[in-house]
Image (cartoon, rainbow, N blue to C red):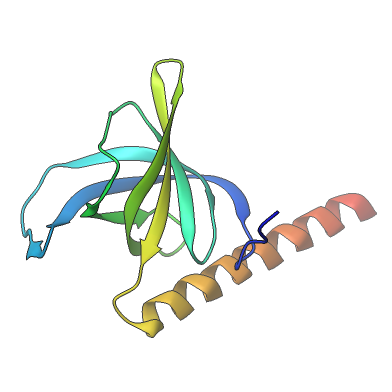
Length: 126
């Protein structure tokens, strides 16, 4: 069994997606649509949508995640898809154009995980 490179954080937050790159061509305009992040790590995420999207590394999606206090932009390729009744569950491999963006995401995920652990510890102590 292959071990993940990054910890995966289960959370449910909304996000918006927009196609940003087709092959080597950057796109400046495009329709934005809403989806729901199910989990995320420093290398990928999973989201749920009512839209059927293609699985290809030719397309790079901009995903704006509605984290509390600070929306965060990430980019990625859809690498798998599962039908979930009338919805689609997608797996995204994140693409980072510089290391600073990846460090920012990892820092945000650590912050959320620490906050969740503190809430659980506080709830347990009551």
